[in-house]
Amino acid sequence: MRQVSLLDVAPTISRVLGVELPDQDGRPIEEVMGWRCKNAILVIVDSLGYSLFRWLEPHLQNVQILAREGIVIEATAVADSTTPAIASILSGLLPEHHGIFSKEGAKESSILSLPEIANASGLKSAVIMDKNGAEVYKGLIDIIGEVAVT
Image 1 (spheres, one colour):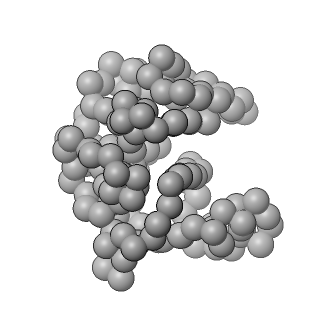
Image 2: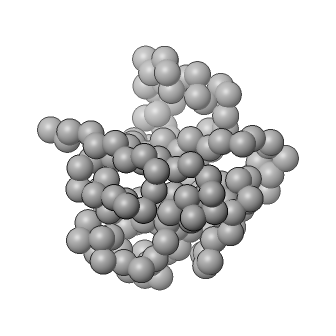
């Protein structure tokens, strides 16, 4: 398998679900294109790299089930802080192209993320994230869950 980047996540999921990203710097991961599904779950855990995930995996029973039924792929980072990295994961764009470097920037951005695009295409979309992040999606997608960050 080729070296995969976090930029490749949104193009891959959009292709699998049959929705189109308007712009993208990443490219679909061809090795998973034969994977047939109607739903996609993307789990993003801040600062949880692939090696740490694999080390913790035996203790994460529900995540083990998702991983067994889906695909887990190691991907290289495109940013060294949370907000631009997540914006890249959800848009398929490099930080210098999406321009989202803060939560305020995410609220003001005209860049559409994968959950918004999927929702506009008639697919049910949900995000569960910290309160500030979840606020970005209010009125834009079907289900929003807020998690308390301590």
